Length: 483
Ligand code: GLN
Image (cartoon, rainbow, N blue to C red; front, side, top):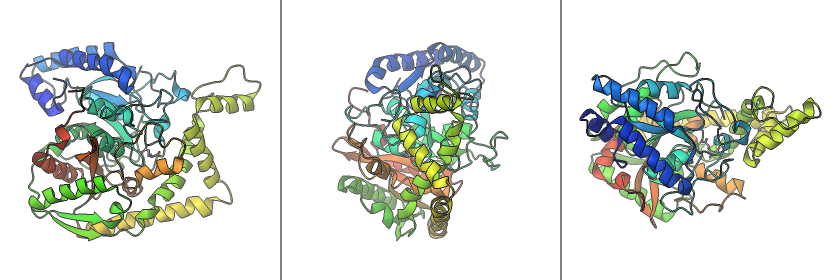
């Protein structure tokens, strides 16, 4: 049963083919079996999960509950979960036990989802390979010498290895879509404000958005429906009705206008380009038309992101000072020594690099030259996208320039690492929803297809991805040894 989708599990639970306790036990057994290889989990909450599964079974026995009741998943360790250790992949929070639930966790729990644990991630979600985690790198089930992508790499590896049918993630510059692409699964980053950020440890608040990693678009639709909506505790969450995403999956694509961004095909590896071209043929067969477009400001998105994101992170991470939050050094001499050593010991190299860059671009004298300029360029990027959506319904292209790379290959070269997100960052800069779905393989490694839409077009993106999945089998492939 471990290779079933959420939809299939949900149907099976209702038909009493298995119970939630059985599903949860099976997921926990797979964690035990595969985690030593994948390192996808930081914390496993077995007892709690079984307790929630028993409750779900009782609800189902009474004929209550919804499509998610009793389904096991995992949460990225960036989401606070009450009375559960929440580390954000950092030594800084190694011993932090959250006193409350993030809204995402609470909403999914209310829908009856059973969380089996917290997944590994790049430290404070800064990374594209899951190698900046204090808890060590995550391995890609398609090739355990390679990265699963990041920062939601633990969630991606857990779903790709069919340890859990789905997991939550967050995406600030690509951290859901990029690992989904590199791990051969579906990743959905919703519109900024669609899902509450309350209780999601902040990296760059104007870019961060919670989403899901799943096997199918249908499963992403089910989970998003339960997670989305206005939250009075997050002033940036939007009061926009939540559609029934699952109900819109089967709309025909006849007449769909697809934009192909010239910028999305620059620097793309030939194997990835071929897979994307083949996917476009599928859409044409389904009655969609394609047209080339250019977003002139898009090539500036990575450099703009690496001003805006570090600026916001330097501010957000100032709370981890060893006093109010986080690791505290032993025997500080005085207050300054306490700050310096607590932060020096608690944060890893990438986080320090970002805090220093961020502090620099926000400092007097540089603020106008860097931060203010970046905000203006960000507006240009958003305007470019808005204009594009005047003539097309969605933009389709690759999610990443290359398939999964070897562990260690880019750790000493931050700029090369940052360029992984060259196709994903634009959507964050403009607050747009975007989805990655598997579209082929290069040398046995999965390739992702990215679909970007205007704000609040999640239903359309899921519909487009679902239609593609009805015509292809890439999303059903399971890595060798994990079947
Ligand atoms: N890889 C990007 C970074 O390192 C994006 C991370 C993310 O989306 N959280 O910042």
